[in-house]
Length: 175
Image (cartoon, rainbow, N blue to C red):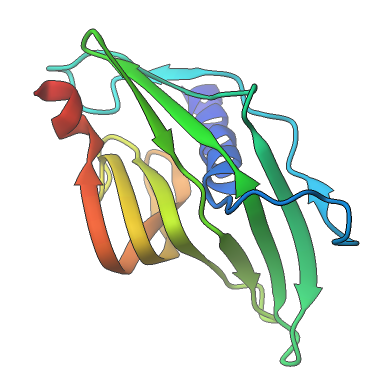
């Protein structure tokens, strides 16, 4: 089971990088920006609980355009900024949803090693089973994520605050 936990943690972090994307823009004319690759492989798990069974998440590779740019702020904080375009495909319960999960967003790594994330626009959130925010959610607006430690998965991001709209993707799959 430990291998699965590590795989989930790596996958979840990869998806957070992808889901904190933003408005489309080419890399030309914006030096220091690098493509946010490789895309994670499709991932399947009963993320909405046993009543819906397995849900598969994947990123549409044909429309994916996401970039990363790293800055050091005046206070020594490292800011890893994400922008571009990403479309999340969610399949489960006989339904397929295609979601614009473009942000922009950023990871903030403080000089003391603590970190958080901020998403603007469209943020797709995966809350692992048996955690405080389990399920699949789309936040539209401003979302702040912080890190908590869990027994099953180790450190994970949770949405600590948001303004705007929150959509329960599991509820859409149930309807």
